[in-house]
Length: 226
Image (cartoon, rainbow, N blue to C red; front, side, top):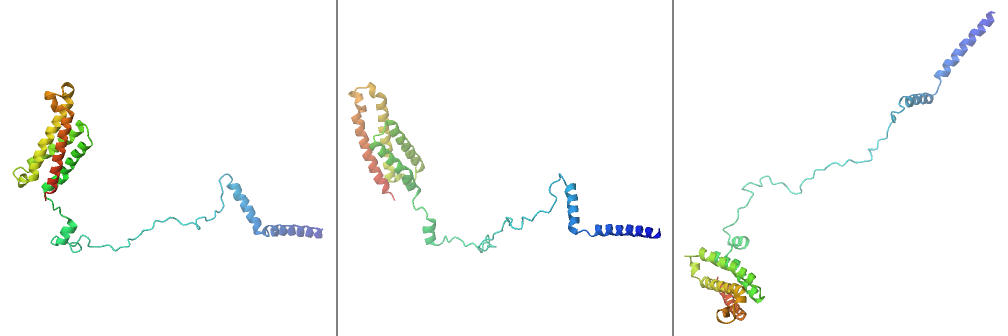
């Protein structure tokens, strides 16, 4: 009976030791598998819970670079010591760089206004433009001459030959413009005899030729003015 009890006790102790050694003797991989299964069960429905690779190490961020000027900064740019004065006492600088206008105001008026207008009237006559165009160009010429007459009244320029010629031409252009305007208005109602003779087309063309010659002579005198 004692032997039987001893055998039973040995069997119980042996079974407990085997159980203990079997549990603690499991491999680490088995433990990891159990742990992973537990994580997957816990995080089910919550997305990926593992470790992501670092994808930024192969890319460079676009960082703004500050560029520096290739020239040296002048600290005293606004200083009077750094800026050289204009050599106004040097004739070469004044005559070449500044290019002072050597024409008088009178010549500027002649070359800037009068001559271009006279050339336009000449072209209008040569191209046989209608009465409205011709009278419009003559009107602007008359107004320009009146302006110059007021501007140079009592001044030496008013005694120039070119100035006197301009006044004569101004009167002539106004008379021809008036003749053409009246002919356009009254010609259908007047005969070519008596007072109607003045509005004859041949007479008007003759007056235009006289005016053309006078304009050309005036242009020559104006260009000779120095």
